[in-house]
Length: 572
Image 1 (cartoon, rainbow, N blue to C red):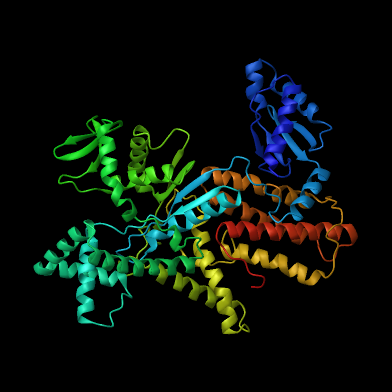
Image 2: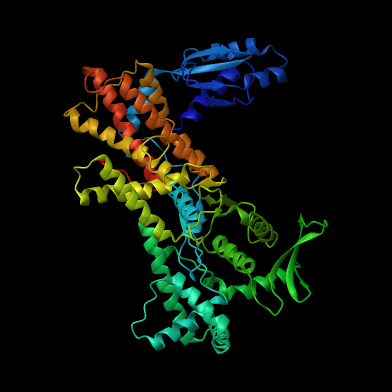
C-alpha cells in the first residue's frame, strides 16, 4: 500500500470539510515519534489565503479527522501543525496483507513506462577501474527498483568499442599473435600501454595502425574480424566484473558505440536539412542560444569535425534516435559522472529541436560524484595508478573473509569464504548506494566493513538476527490476529508500511540512497523493538503479533537489499 497517499487522502477530505478544499495538505512523516506518525503542515498557508486564524482552522481539520478508520488521533500543535497517530486496527490489517504478499505489500505502479537506462559504459580499450564502479552500482539499483515497480526496463551498456585507438590495438594484437602462437589477452591495461609505446616509438607500426583505422571504418572484413575478437575478449573481462558485483548486466545489454556507426551520416544530414547544423570553419556545428559561452555567444555543439570525422556527440544523438524510435522509450536515464552534465543537457536540447526527443519522453541526466581516497583525492593505488575494479573487489572479499574469521575463529575457512564474499561485495556496493549519488564520498575499508552504523554488514546481520528468531520460535500461528499495543510495535508497523512510498520516491528521483536510509531505519527500529518487546518469551496473541512484525521486517530487509543488489545470508 502507499501509506503516504492513503493518509493524504484522509487529510484532503478533512480539508474539504473544513472549507479549504484544494489547499495543499503538505503531509510529512513526524520527526519525533513521541508526537505522532505524520504531521500536516498545510493549514498555515491555507489559513493565510482564507484570512482565518490558523489554529482555529487546524482544529476544524482535526475535528473532521475524528472517527476516521485510518487516523486514531489528530492534535493541533504550535501555530497550526496537526500531529497524526494512525489507527492500530488499520495498521494491523495492512501488516497482515503485506505479510501474506510476496511483494511485502508493494503494488506495481499504475503508470507503467518503458525506461531505457544507460549505465556502466566502460571503454573496451582498457580494463574496468574504480571510475566505472559508481555508474555500474547506481544504475543497476535504479534498474532493479523500476523493474520491481512494474516498469519495462531496458538496460543499455554503451561501451566504448569504436574509435581511432582500435586501429592501434588491432595492429598490436596482430603483431603479438605473429610472435607468440599462445598469445593471451589477459591484462588489457598492460596490453594498451604496450601498444601505445609501440605506436609512439615505431613509425612503421604507427602507419600500420592508421591503415587499420581506415580499414576498420570502411568495413574491411579481415580487420573487422580482428576487432570483434578484441571486443569479445574485452567484454569477457567486463562480464567477469559484473558477475562478481552481482549486477543484472549481461552480454545482451551491450549496445556499443559501433552499432550506431551506420547512422552517423544520417544524423548530420537531418540536422543540416532542418537548419540546425551549420558549417563553421569546416566543421558541422549546432549553435545553442540556451547555452551561452563566457562572451555571451551561443554555445557550439560540434557534431562533425573538420575532415568529416564524428564525435561522441554524433554517436549520442544517434543513440537518442534509436532509443526513442526503436526501443519506444518513455523515459531515458543516463547514469554518468556529474562532470558530463553540460554535454548531456546540450544533447537533450539538440535532440528535442531535431524532433528525436518528443515532449512526452523524459530524458534525465543521473549524475554522480567521485569516489575519493582518505587523502581527499580521487581513489588511486599507492603508486598513483588507477585501481582495477577486479583488484578492488578481490580485496573486499579477502578483508570481509578475514573479518568473519576474526569474529568466529571456529568457522571453517570454506564457510568463512562463503560468508565473506557477499559481505565484502555488499559492503562496497552499500558504501556507494547509502550516499547521495551527487556527492563525492570517501572510500574507507574500516567504515564500510563495520558491523555497526549505516553499513551493509549491519543490515545483513540485522536480517540474520531476524532469521535466528524463527529458528528458535518453533511452531507459531501465522494467521493469528495482530494486536498492536506497545509504542514500539506501532512505530515499527508504521515504518514497515512505508516501503512502497520509499520505493516510489527512489524510482521517481533515481536516488537509491532513499531506500538505503529506509532499510537502516527499519533495522534500527527492529533492534529497539527486539530489546524492548520480548518476542519468544511473550505469550499468546502478543507473541504471534511480535513474530509477525519480525517476519515482515525480515522480508522487507531482504527485498530492499535485493533491490540495492545486495545479497542476504541466513547465518553470519
